[in-house]
Image 1 (tube, helix red, strand yellow):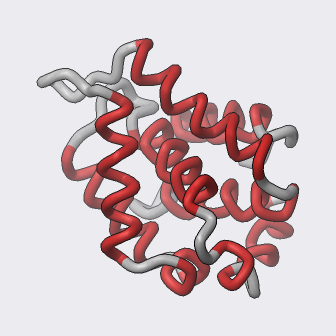
Image 2 (cartoon, one colour):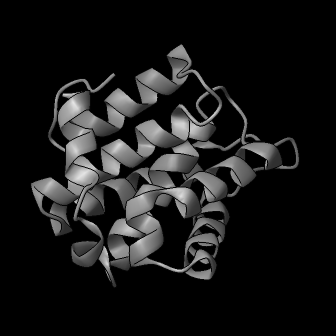
Amino acid sequence: MFGMLKEKLAGAASRLSGKTDLLEGIAAGGILVSAADGELESEEVAVLIEALCANETLSKAFTDTQISGIVDKMIKKASPNAAGKIGMVGKIALEREVAEVKNKSSAEDREVMLAVLVDVASADGDIEPAEKAMINKIAAKLGFGAVV
């Protein structure tokens, strides 16, 4: 399925333009993946924003300012504590954003979301087991089977 997801990214920018619900879901999913190891670190947020801004599809559909603004909005929803840990309330808020994507986006857009999350998780060269588990959990919420 991973190979098919990569193919979905081509030509998706025009469809995504203006779909902030989808960008919010992608950002929320990215934060969940980044925090899968138990804490959300500022370095991980920087990598998330950089990966989203560098993503060929998203960078054509949204400006860097829009992307970083949406990521900041999702971080506020996550309500991480001083140690960078996201509590249950924050996780639920982010998972709701992901669930909205399933309800408001096409299957193709949901596949694009998963491809972006895989790109974010692999930005440091390797997808860790906790990140794989979170990506697959998100894939299930979006109505798909395991991705990684």
